[in-house]
Amino acid sequence: METTVQTNAKELWSGGDSPFKVSYGKIMMWYFLISDTFSFAGLLISYGAIRLSQPAHDPEITGSWPDPNEVFAAVPFVHGHYPLVFVTFMTFTLILSSVTMVRAVQEGHAMNRKGVLFWLSLTIVGGLLFVGSQAFEWSHLIHEGMTLKGNPFGAAAFGQLFFLITGFHGFHVSVGVLLNSWAFLLTFFGVFHRRGHYEMIEKLGLYWHFVDLVWVFVFLPFYLL
Amino acid sequence: MSNLTHEESIRRVWRVCYILAFVTIFEIAAALLHYYTMPESPKWWLNILFVVLSAAKAYYIMSEFMHLKYELKAMTLTILTPFLFLVWGIIAFLWEGGYWLSLRQLWQ
Image (cartoon, rainbow over all chains, first blue to last red; front, side):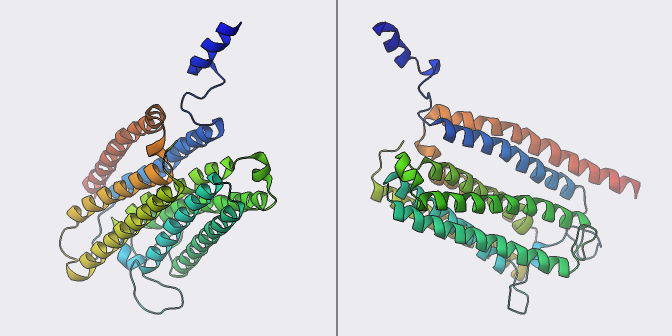
């Protein structure tokens, strides 16, 4: 009997032991994120195909692809033409909220409940700030006439793809804020502390960084290229 | 899992934060410089730069924030190899988009 137990312990793929030395929950979060990557990639590749099927940016041609510096030039409470300033602020809130999330994970490793609460609350504030900024951006653009039906800046497909893709990303951010708030409550009531580990914060951290990662590739085609 | 101390991993996180912030500021500055000083000149070389810098940002987020650098190599490969399909997807559909444009211009 004893020999079988020992061989089983060495056979990593025979069960009971993770071959990747990662827990089941974290691996499943990774696999979910891979599938989610393909959802976003499908949307962004459609953006690329549709964009290349339209005339490239040219002020002379009506309906050509718009210049992001002309479209994204509004800053709340400030009058004037400030291209890309507000989206830089949005990008920074997301980067910083990713950093605070890693700090929450690290404090979880150190079993420091107060530290997790502090950094997780900053992450939630960053997420809310980002979604709020996106709400401002959307309402401003809709006010300017960019809707699913038309776009005063150029090709209508630009606005349609913008609302579809940033909407799907903003939905992910909103879900992340809700999940982080739920984890905040569980941390507050000491559920993870009694469990002996803060792995839930790590899994939510993976999701939150993924949202930041996707933003890099939403930011690139819509605001830079 | 990493063998880093608590202090060392905190320092690494802030270092990645500075890198991401610096790259983002550089991208915005380059885009605005082009927009204000030479809007008529071709932008393709700048676009290549933006794609490369975005890939660099993705590398830092995945390796440090998502901790992939410190996982087992088999795990990293399991996660990264499916993305090879995207290489085909990007080439095929961007090609297709250009073809749609040529058809559009043919009919006009």
